[in-house]
Image (cartoon, rainbow, N blue to C red; front, side):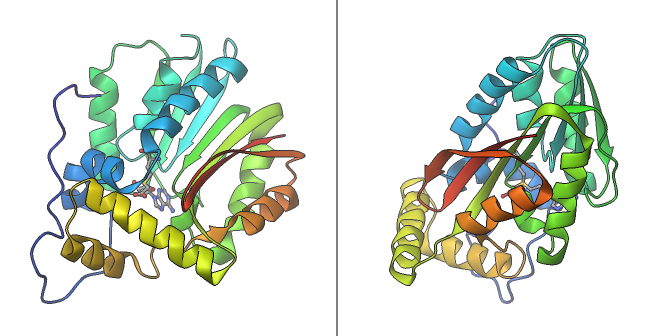
Amino acid sequence: MNQNKPPSDQLFARPLEQVERFSFDEHVAGVFADMIARSVPGYDLTLTMIGVIAAHFVQEHRRCYDLGCSLGAATLAMRHRIPDSCHIVAVDNSEAMSRRCRENIRQDKAAARVDVLCADIMDIGIDQATMVTFNFTLQFIPAGQRLSVLETIYRGLEPGGVLILSEKIALPGDSEQELFETLHHDFKRTMGYSDLEIAQKRAALDQVLVPDTTDTHKERLHMAGFREVYTWFQCVNFASWLAIK
Ligand code: GEK
């Protein structure tokens, strides 16, 4: 990744007459590194652990996927920890994201081959995968399609292959939901966002990012076929699971 400080996210800083539905357009892609780091508690840790998990599971000549790759942060986390003979397929349906991702990969010096596809996750094939990273992206897939996407991933993994699934989560109880949401907003304030920015971004994401509970995620992973599903991370209303075929 570019070593310079990423452009700072000011997209929701001014009062907007009408808050548009959130999309991963040119404006978002331009500030995305700063946006996600200041919005998702534990995001950097998920990247570090994706590298650690890749180093543990991925051997010579294996294939990895990064679904919803955005600027390629998880792709690079894997690329820096897998053998040079491996191959990563990075997928994002935002033209602005995939173009920037390609550029970030081009500037990176690691050797493993990376193909960046500008495509919908629901349309691609997954084949002979040892590791699939799905870092904060299933939450944007329509609820009715989520199981079928996980089934496609399961079928495309080699036996013993792993899926890392990270998501914003809904909490099962009202008081827990309210507390964790408040703490998440407090985190965003601590990271420099104003109340206006938090409120406008939240309105933009309404019905776009739709979180499920941990129980729903785990049940769905089992329904897709995964035999082992471990929660390796949770920080307030964000969690990540390691699912093994
Ligand atoms: C990271 N994983 O930095 N098909 C392909 N891409 C999609 C789809 C879809 N159906 N829906 C959304 N996206 C990254 C962060 S961001 C998470 C992932 C966030 C893409 C979308 O264009 C965006 O780039 C990404 O998924 C979600 O580790 O913004 O909270």
